[in-house]
Image (cartoon, rainbow, N blue to C red; front, side, top):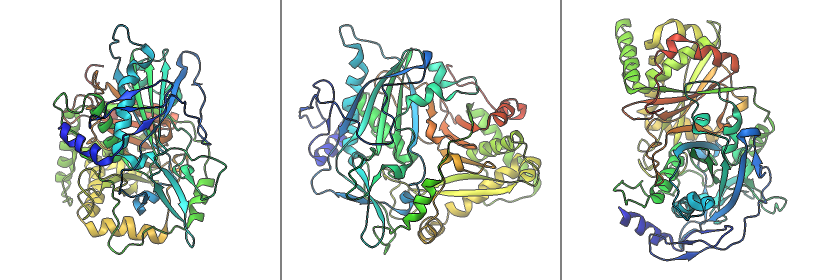
Length: 527
């Protein structure tokens, strides 16, 4: 297992470099010792909050240090990576943000407390970034006759922040049992807040600002835990890429297979384009600028995390399929566990929003294209490879016709695309290139819709950095929108699922009080 990563690092050439307050020595898997300079990173890019603290009172978050971790491209690698239509359509959305709550590590006597956690995490972050070296580059806008956007593998680095919030506990962040969660202090635990992906792009000759990094991580030591948060430019990668990087980081931090854990797949960095497709893709960039100008402060929102045990999810699946069978409907495919759970949420949110029976409502899921579209590897592909899939109906049909009917709507929508490679490409590539429609920022999304992001297949609870597995997972403030549902694997496995739901305050209060919805919710183990 160690040999896989050792071989990969040898191919990548010189090790990553980092700027830190102290002199650090790392021993890469190749066995070479690399020294790093003492100079502190100067925060020169605009639009990114760089205060030394955030929040107030007991929730104060104090920044201890900032590093810019560098990772140069290996010899003979691509210096410029052109973005696919799947990547480009993410330019107008926020950075992808997720974070995990880890137990407090045991301190070793005689070690500097301020560096104990970062001594383990900073070197591993540098080594992981070296494997994903395009994420250490910068996004640029170019083109002589048409606007294009690409990633330059400049090696300028990803940001790594070390912070402390001694007045914040794991319970404050985990938010169990389900309750309205204040934005602070959770918002302050994430880096690169307040950015759209296009904000990280720099035009040729623009010297007025240094563009923001594509990737940043913040490690915050809480009163009784450690919170590790990552922000990734969504044009550079989707949720699969996000968790692939985090899985690699944690794998290297705990010794790169020293505990016999299997390694994540090596990254596949070459972007996929259909045969004969124009590369780079020319943009009607005025449309992107127009979307950016529509940014506005989000409305008041409340967030709650709901845990569903494996048994609860299986019961919902059995109920949905039984209802469909009794109705005489023959869906294209049986309802899956996730579709049954999302249909349960869809019906409950329609009730919580008090939608009129004639009100149109939609549920948007994302279908993964890895392994479904020829040329897109099933494992390791870095970039965006998902297609939005929309099921729509009236609130009256969703609420009034039972769980089976609502789940059947989701199942049919997914089946219509998931088994048809040509449809996936046609809808997500050809049509987008012609129309170039960009999704709005989260605050501007339709209130009658629910958008489900992430997947219960992502390995969240396997991210042991060397002192214990996570106890909870949270999404970042930039992913908040009325109707946004973030899906995670549930703690304890066995088919459990966690949904982090964001709604208007009055709707959230009604959802938490909805007995039919809450009957399926169960406490996660060990909380």
